[in-house]
Amino acid sequence: MSAPRSTAKDGIAAQPVFPTPPAKRVETLAGWLRNCGPWQIFWLALALRIAAVTLLHYYRVRPQDDHFEFGWEMGRVARALASGRGYADPFHGHTGPTAWVTPLYPLLMAAVFKIFGIYTAASAWVILAVDSVLNALLIPLICATGERLFTRPVARWSAWIWALYPAAMQFAVKWFWEMSLTAVLFQAALLLALIMGGVGARPGDGPTWRRWLLFGAIWGCLGLSNPGTLAFLPACGVWILAAKGRHWWRDFPKALAAGLVFLSIVAPWTYRNWLALHAVLPMRSNFGAELYLANGPGAAGIIMEYEHPNVDLTQFKLYDTMGEIAYTRWRGQLAEALIRKDIPRFLRLCLTRVYFYWAGIPGASDKLVGNLLREVNTAGTSCVGILGLALALKRRRPAAGLLAAAFLLYPIAYYVISAAARFRHPLEPMIGILGVYLFQQAELRWGFSVFGSKRPANL
Image (cartoon, rainbow, N blue to C red; front, side, top):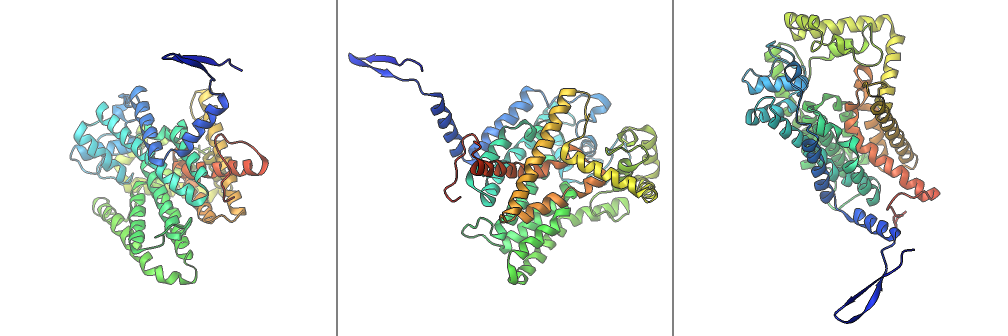
């Protein structure tokens, strides 16, 4: 034990001053962390993300291939928009109108390009800063969701993990794509469903007209950001109605109104596709091409990028000559023929993608340590999140079934076409919340200690 220090001032006898014990300092820090509000955590998280973008120079995009890594297809479309050519040209050169990607994020990029320049460092910094804000905005949503589903300690520690864990911020600070936008919209839709369903009831909760209309608007924006999320929409809406029990029919007109709001948001995009591409395309045009790239002769569970039009010159020329609609339909027909010819192979590929989705893609890069850390992170967080969900289902926690529906339905499209880590991002806030819940329950039952957590009085 350290010896006490003595102090003397103005003739007063020196009094011994004992150093603060390490355990006391840890408890003081833990208390401060527990008492931080969600918006305090938000500002810290945002500062960390902006610092990473700035100090690690993530805004400096390599100019190779005419800056294609600056947003890939979305960056190309944003460039066409900012240049006055309309929603077009997803690859190289001027190939005409496109619906290869949905419009919400490209429109955001195009607005930045208009102000700060096309493919400039300033535009890159601004776009990544916006993504960082969106990523950090998940923190108050995570806090509210975790507190309604479980307890305040679960909510706070889930928020701190999201704020500080590098894997949670990677897509915001390095990627020019829609992951952060989709994730914050998806979490907002889930939290709104909990409020409408009365989970963790607060005064004023319930499925009001305003909330149903907001529900439709959020899901409309989600469709224009990442249509893959829409697989969860029907289950989410039905769950809200079912929460009313026998009186669900009273809210049915509100649900219909929410559907009209959803359609009013996505319909202009669908109508534009009809005018520009002469095809009925509610969201995207590229499913057939992606289906072939995922299940073609050389497929092994990951997409065959070497046959993608943005990589293979022959495929690009076919895309340019045939036109986007004819090209994607042709590739889709080839994929369907291959699948029908060997259904067991297709099912094996789907199961491989299920594994890759939840455990990570082996050898995703040429860096051994980076690959190992990535796989440990992906598989480890998936395990604790799924086990936390299983525990919530076993204990019949409110809305556990809704979370299970999200875990089951949202990834379905990616099991068929692609399993890249970025497609799991909208689920990661819930994976974190369920993982913290699992560890908290382990502590309560078996005495494991989670730093700074205390047993809630109501458990």
